[in-house]
Image 1 (cartoon, rainbow over the protein chains, first blue to last red):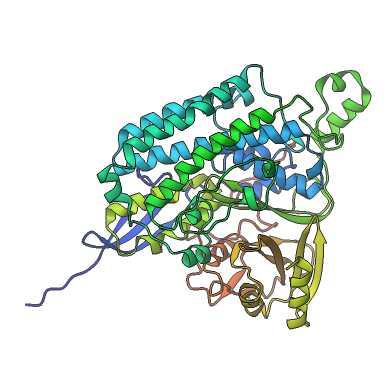
Image 2 (tube, rainbow over the protein chains, first blue to last red):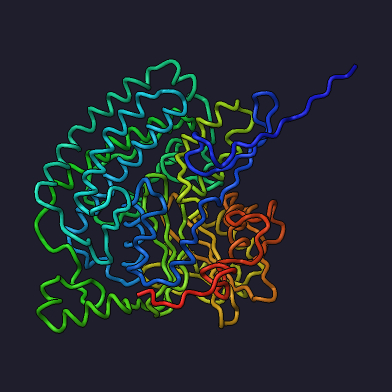
Length: 393
Length: 160
């Protein structure tokens, strides 16, 4: 009697503790080996791009918070830089605003990578790391709350600068945190890097070669772990990044372990950048001197007629950039986050396209899991560091 | 190579196809015709080194002819340069050749463009909806699609 075999198609449904969000994977399995994986997305599609066509440029900033909700200030930064580029006021942003933006962006990078490490380790089985990382993340969330009022969706940056200055005492708190961070990273490494189980679960898993990674569009730490030495903060710098001294970690192994090491090194470099930025911080204005674009301070609104009129016009009608289009990419913790804005001279954008790094990184998933075990699928989803809020927008 | 030099090279090879070149805020945008787009993209990838397609999207200019523009944002990783290529797409003939054979990343971007804008891509390996449910009717990001959805009254109040 001939023995026939079939592949089994199972659904790793949108509701799953290890898929980091509402991601549906249809897996065709031959025993434990994955023959084909098809991701289905769109469960968190909220229509951010459509909504932004009906809102003024200032009103879109809270919408961008909710894209990659684990790194909200990165999205804010990308959007605000894009609008400033569209307006042509990039060189009028004051130094203090640029420095605080860098501090916040690197704190956000730490926040996002801590969540990545926590959830990736938890999926593979190391539960202690999850709790340790979230303990550190609470410190960053406290800083967010002190600076903007919200723990997660900060809505802190504005077109032309920041919404509010740092409260007193926060610089010391950030400095204390940034100095303690390398010690914590050593703790995480001590738990994971030399651990035989971790090494067996991550070395050689999810390999994607350099050419395949560039072809499929992977960016960020996943691309740097495949040997491409490219970081937007160093190569197309924005917001004063050219003044900081930091290294860009690159590895050649192209597997999950390499991505893990690259992100850990990025966390160390982020702490370095925060300390350098804190040393650079000097008192000064936090909003550019563009009365038609940036809101005037409250005392001018209440006491002068120009302040009142500007406040009224900016809030009710908004500012109108010249007709044109720009693309601004920033190095978000997950990869290159891009904003493509088209303006036709009206206060609302004609089109805002968000280029989400996780959307494009997820496209590499089917070719990375082919021929691997089902358990590796979990490790690979974790290592790609996807956030469904960004993928689905 | 500077942006000027790339544009000159492009114009030298595809003189009839290049319709317009705009430089705004330090970025160069080249508008080309939609028929030779695969050859132009192959030329840009192989001869000019634009190996990363960072973004592919459609823009709806309702009321203007042509109604749509498909925008390709390219990046050269070695030279750290960006370039934008746009192609006009008319409403009646809303299909474009796929560039997923040039850059594999275009696959999902073109699916999203089809899903949300209704611009179909010829020879695409897997053209189906990606963000909306599979049985959705209509293309939500078009300007004539209501922002509140097809089954609700439009919002009558002020937004600001």
